[in-house]
Image (tube, rainbow, N blue to C red; front, side, top):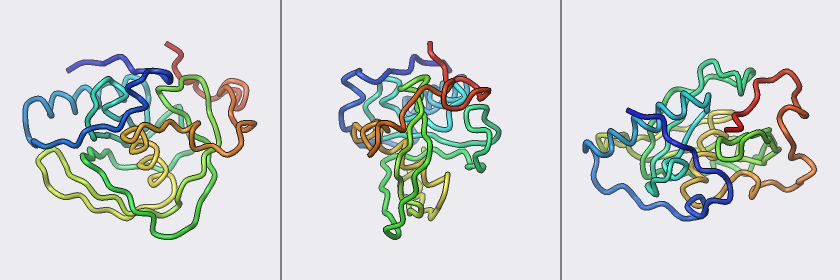
Length: 178
């Protein structure tokens, strides 16, 4: 459908709690999902949440095959997740570098649960229930944070571990700045 503008940190919509989706398998929902997919792909994102394109609904898309922004990342299957719930499976946390299309050009070290269960729905309203770990778990947690008004810098414990991608990782594909 369309590549949409990605809202940047500081936009008030990114700090709000998104509304639950109440109607599945509608033309409007499918159009939103296509826009999310097209925008994520155009920006080389690992995921994208509806609030990032100005839509305050509990909808995220994510998936990683080969991505220049995350060259060493494990693959994550492309997933549409609606009205998600995340349950940590244990207390194990892992620090890892994250970037965000709403915080272009920067990366930071963020603690995330290593092992989670996520539940929600697909576009037709069918239940999704998965147990994941590692990078897959990190991506899901990052995207779902957008639905409760959190950006990754808000989860950081040590702001000395926040910096420009070009300085921290010379030679890595730049995060988009436009």
